[in-house]
Length: 364
Ligand SMILES: O=C(O)CCC(=O)C(=O)O
Ligand SMILES: [Fe+2]
Picture 1: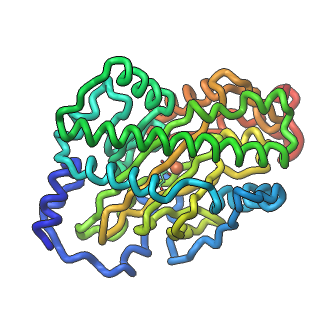
Picture 2: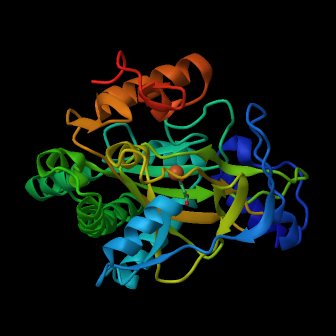
């Protein structure tokens, strides 16, 4: 058993390899995770399960969906239409690629490849003060498709087993991405109707085919520390994010200052509202704070899709100054560079007088 862990560790980024191995702790020990970020009040996980609403994508009820986005900012999606075999394929190729030695992953996913490899922090959207215990593959949907055309034109030969593996992964991710685009669009349309968004504005509020996919592996943690986080607490900058976590679980959301576990349920997806949708909805929808707990028994894998507005489309709502996603991202990056943290929507919020009404100097 221990030799298996050792061989897996060669594939882990060096800071995630424990020098001392121990038997996995009992599952109960995974329930007491505390946010490591000392700048925020610590919230305890009490082993509470989030009783998330279910939305049936075949017959979505706009009211139920709207309520879920208001109350929770996150829900489960059933009848989403993704063939389970496709998800299995993505997982299986990703698992094989993650299992390659760390150095091989770094050279296989080069800067020119349509899929990037990262570890420690998925990108600048997250706090850079804490090293996240995660590694992943990142793929922009348009880049995945372009690569296919390029390869058809060039009739590239894949003689290396690792390149073959890479190409199979890319193909399955591209197919998975097409499902995500369609699902993202369907959910967005129902929600936009429920919120009665202006049709002209709505046109620039979702650029689903410009979204990206991330496949994450959260290396299991066999060390002595009890409170280890795979990805620290954050809100997504997206319009919406669609997550597919494996049976290991570990996703947690913050509600009423308590962390709730979001359990794995087979054949369901988890959709969470991002910052852009919160602004578009004028705070009717909630960009939910969430994080991922590291597991002490096994690696965790998730496949996540993030959909964004058109970069230059102006987001208009009375609670916020008009802004574009491009401006939002630039501000997020500037804040992270300066402080290590994302400030997010508060940077664009209109100032209020006495807690109600807009300061006329701040409202347009
Ligand atoms: O891995 C997951 O389930 C969630 C990842 C996540 O929250 C993110 O990438 O923003
Ligand atoms: Fe997230």
